[in-house]
Amino acid sequence: MSETTVTVESAAETSSCCGSCGTNAGAAPAAESARTSVFQVKGMTCGHCVTSVTAELKKLDGVEDVAVDLATGRVTVGSTRALADSEVAAAVDEAGYDLVGRVEG
Image (cartoon, rainbow, N blue to C red):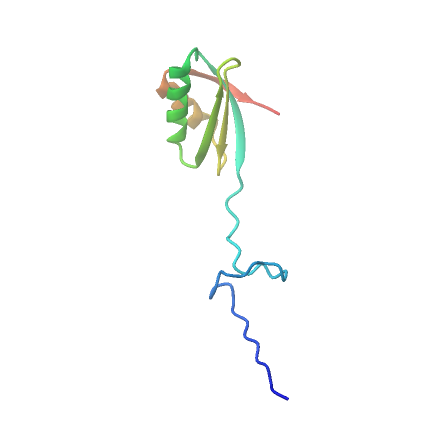
């Protein structure tokens, strides 16, 4: 009878594992947790306002996406880190608008 040799490579050596064996070898490292924050912004009235606020907020470190609801003045920001109200206020101010505050819940 012939002998069979099985070689197991570590995840550091290969990333081709499909994970079906339960080892999860080769899986990408977990990204930083996504955070969603909602802010109330005063003074936005048109598409230009939306574009300006979005552009300034996207300059903040960790901001991945920005959604502005022009009708309500609410701005939803997706980021990889917690955002300080002061830095959001500064970005909104730079765009020419006023941050009323963070919307809870």
